[in-house]
Image 1 (spheres, rainbow, N blue to C red):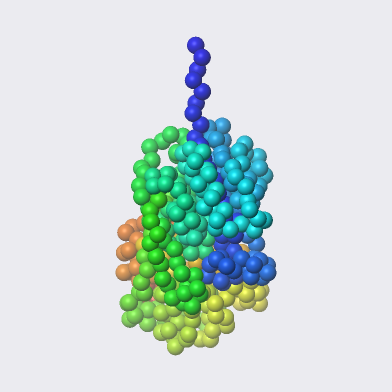
Image 2: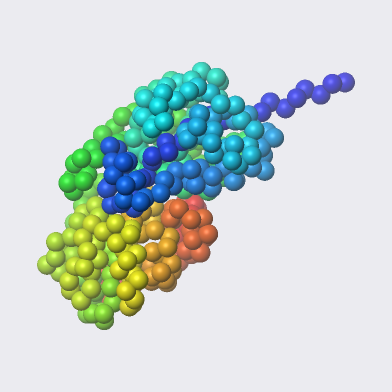
Length: 379
């Protein structure tokens, strides 16, 4: 009796190779600034993030039929990884455009893929959303600077884990997730304006998929005043790297300083050493020596403390400061918005995310600290 061959799981893959370029360059996004970021020496990271995701799928390669976008949008990476694949479509030019994403997404879906896997940010999600029919299953690998949409895994490793569940045929809930994008020009001017573009069907496994970002400025000014007073009483020789967000901006305002809402600022002895610093500027400051602390905030509703809008605080910056010196500032009100979910880690380096997993120190009031779990999954 002849055995019926096992039906292979068909995955379509699209990579936005320019995604995330503006992060380390403090450009608040990558739309229309790719050339500027490349000229500043920023190296593209989207391929590495897809590689991290696909590593989790490698043990099941024989169960997968992989259809990929050409060249830098997918084929180059999977060929390098030694994965059997079929290239679908063509690129119009060497420099990829949003139109390529839209066209290739349509072509891949027309080939009957079970899952459309894509890497990018909110702009990529928007392009995918505008190009494919309702009900097509998708999953995003986070590679952009700002990710407000709920169609992305919490990090690349989580994306790989979730794809593996699907390939193995395990029970995974399906749901609809919101696609949002931000006005990057307004974003660079310190104004957050997001717009709802639609929904996409995703594998809805809560610990692997991020929540839609919640906006809004923290209003507990008295608490921030207390925390600011505490920081001012600390050793003046300690340098503070403050990540973006309304909480840290509120701390600076409480000290009478003008920081940035969406950038990374550097403080020492009551003075701002750098405003809206790039990753390279942070690295150069750290080379001068001294004691340093990194103070980040959790994105409301999502819980990310690394890898969402603060890519300037890169793995090498975190390691240079010291893992124990990565602190979180969050009022109790903000912690409650997480509903018990852990802080999420997506530094871009899986080993660092693993090392940071566990209880993190949270500054929540005047000389008041709490311990709160951090993880690379939303368990």
